[in-house]
Image (cartoon, rainbow, N blue to C red; front, side):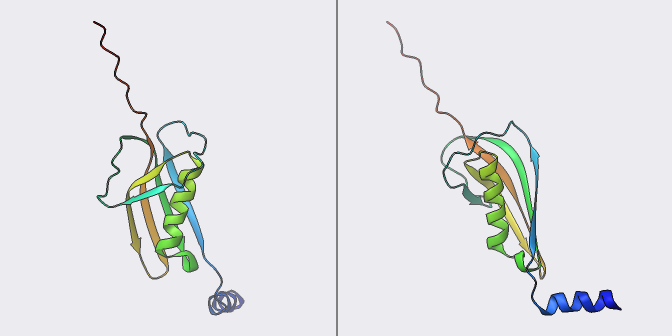
Length: 118
């Protein structure tokens, strides 16, 4: 009974939620770029070439179960991994939980064409 009352009291007091972030690393993480990590939602695509660094997932619970908290968690983890953007982002919102995922990418270096010698 005490456990039930404590749980009910925590819900009534509006205790904050929390966010979990999980990843699958595909390439060695890089140092942070110092720039904001860009988000490309759904089928949006950056205009520059990129390569994939990691698959990211963020799950927000209770007070952190909204779009802003989940996307900010994806961006922060992407920044820590040295990514320039998160692409193919999808977020599903529920009553007490939000789930978001995407692919953490880094911009590919532009290829320089060798001069033609004559």
